[in-house]
Amino acid sequence: MNDIILHHYPGSPFAEKARCLLGYKQLAWHSVEIPLVMPKPDLVALTGGYRRTPVLQIGADIYCDTALIAEVLERIAPLPSLFPEPVGGLSRILAQWADGPLFQAAVAHAYQSAVARGLLGGKEQVAAYVADRAAMRGKHIAMGQAEADACLSEYLCRLEDMLADGSPYLLGECATYADFAIYPPLWYVRRIRPEPSLLRQAPKLQAWMDRIAQIGHHRHDPLSAEQALARARASTAQPPSGAALEGGFARGARVRVSALDANAGTVEGELLACGANALAVRRDDPRAGQVVVHFPRAGYILSQA
Image (tube, rainbow, N blue to C red):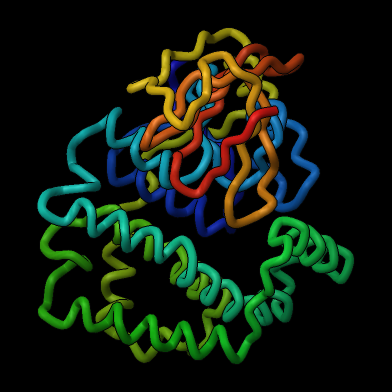
């Protein structure tokens, strides 16, 4: 029951990030495909409301957000490290930038091409996708095409400069978490816009992308959502590592966890851990049983239920 299960869909850049991390760590995993847009009843049964892609499941432990997923995989397989010294901290900071500004610019740059090529389906599917993403974005303003193209062009120049010394990876001779966070938004652009795009201005970066792609996703097998739920029901969650309680919260308090930057769904449960690096809440679900849902501390709001 301790197998690694990834809940994802093929076209998600953040799912590609998790898949590449699993490939780099050479960890076998099970693949559960989830819908592109809400509703996602099987996923929500595990998470309690969190709807972002991907989600990692190990038994009855449910890990949300690729920032935390990377830390979990590092604990499971410490070598090769995603955070080697002395650039471990820098790799995390670059990853935060990649998950925010770079991702937003890349997706906005590729969006019109995705619609034109029918990758999001027909008019009804496109309308559902737009409404779904608007609901998740909340009050944040969507980036326009001109702004996205200008931002992405500048970002690509900066990344190309990082490879100017001939290093195979962005921070030197070894791949780090930064490589696997920066690659997926550009993978999305290459996948959606195979015609000449802004990437042509960055030949070293394209060669670096080929290098990351060659790492692959390692061995994985399909698993149904019902099988994943059954594994959660049959498992017992592990005690959260470093189960500190900070911020004046008491263990066992009823709390809510929500993302700071988007309407990604609120999760309510019994607080198990609240430390500098992670949050964990326990919840019961009629389909998943008793599970523990884990979040990174940075980027999430904890409040009394």
